[in-house]
Amino acid sequence: MRAAARRGRAAPAARDSLLVLLFLCLLLKTCEPKTANAFRPNILLIMADDLGIGDLGCYGNNTLRTPNIDQLAEEGVRLTQHLAAAPLCTPSRAAFLTGRHSFRSGMEASNGYRALQWNAGSGGLPENETTFARILQQRGYATGLIGKWHQGVNCASRGDHCHHPLNHGFDYFYGMPFTLTNDCDPGRPPEVDAALRAQLWGYTQFLALGILTVAAGKTCGFISVSGRVVTGMACVLFLFFISWYSSFGFVRRWNCILMRNHDVTEQPMVLEKTASLMLKEAVSYIERHKHGPFLLFLSLLHVHIPLVTTSAFLGKSQHGLYGDNVEEMDWLIGKILNAIEDNGLKNSTFTYFTSDHGGHLEARDGHSQLGGWNGIYKGGKGMGGWEGGIRVPGIFRWPGVLPAGRVIGDPTSLMDVFPTVVQLAGGEVPQDRVIDGHSLVPLLQGAEARSAHEFLFHYCGQHLHAARWHQRDSGSVWKVHYTTPQFHPEGAGACYGRGVCPCSGEGVTHHRPPLLFDLSRDPSEARPLTPDSEPLYHAVIARVGAAVSEHRHTLSPVPQQFSTSNILWKPWLQPCCGHFPFCSCHEDGDGTPR
Image (cartoon, rainbow, N blue to C red; front, side):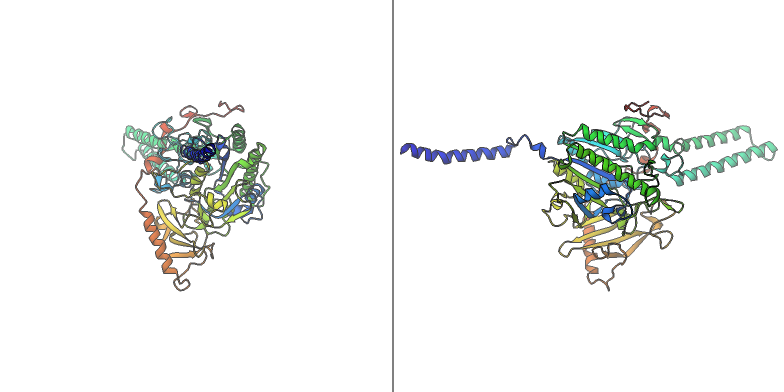
């Protein structure tokens, strides 16, 4: 009996010891299973450039063919109120990469320039900013970026690469450090600083005419001036011409280049080959890292002007060159998704598709539209307040984890992708700075019924143009406009005759009192509410105003990356293959520059 009693007392003691040991194991994470990495998905992020939300079948377009993106939406979750943090490329992508409004890193307009202008400027995403790539790299992910960067390259010397993707958490980069512009196509009119370039050319012609007049007057004896003075004036004119033409006269060679990691592989790039090169690189990256986990950010050059489209798609759509380019983009995405499936990665890959901002309404070629369609939403690219400039596609797929065919109408942001992928990788967002995004994992999985965003703030450059209040208890989404651009011509829906609408100055209207819309009833922002038509008008304006005031307390001054000194072209920063200024190379089929 004593033995039985001892065994009876020993059993609870053993259980208690086992529980203590198990608790310590969990506390110290020493009992974590070796297969934990298997639960971390591969992450594929696909971002189009200048794509309008109304250009896709799954968002209501029935004339453009986008079957691959539509299927992605059918197999995953589609967001209908997904919002860019800025309406232009550079600031929107900075916010996407960091989960923070771009002005927090100085990546916003400070003096008129609203995006980086040169590969050889010294501005760019600061080294102290943390991208999702850096956190995933620290978590053991292979991290690749293929396509457009547009976040800067160098700071002080040609080889410091302080803003380069490899200095921001990506361990592989292939693509454009800059962005497509009309200057990349010799047959198109200039785009980079076109107005300033025309002004400088006008000054040059005026000065040349003056010098020729003085020289002619001297020859005919009408003016008494020494030959040295005329020669000196001609030399000054020549130096003036060379000083600006050395950059603006070679925009294609300086900006339209391809890089692999730190090396320039094509200068200038051959536009007709770019789509096939990007596809080849993306498929190769997936195959090389199929044993995972990997992060691949596929930053497409489609559908930014000059709309370079291969012959297989030219003339095939119902919407001209732009439609052809959209359909080619969808085909390219289909090939990438096929590579994911062919390598057995579909069920272990978290896939996301979006655009950096709305379609470019002012992009035209005569009477032909070269920009996208933003559906029922007012405005477009460059407009920080109107929905057409900031409402973008948002599609997520992870078979078996995210419900197929689900549609979510709550407000979400491109900045939410940062904390979302960090959470999926098992990482933590930085605690030493303001993070404006919220993880979408609970919302996408259905664990949360509402978006974590109560307020969202919509900037144009450094100017707050609008704010949105998601009144969760009623389901209403209120939008307050403090500033809106003045469309040109009057009654049009964009600022035709200029690149994009301005953020400030004479080209905008400041509303006092502000404009108010209820997006849940009027998503087109066609009918501004008044105190007479909306009993809650004053209460909503006051509540949003208080949120704006609270938001402004989170702002702090930072170095401006778009200042004149940072924007200017600097020859000593210019990426170059070969000997500067005779930069020229093209890559062989085996990947070797020649």
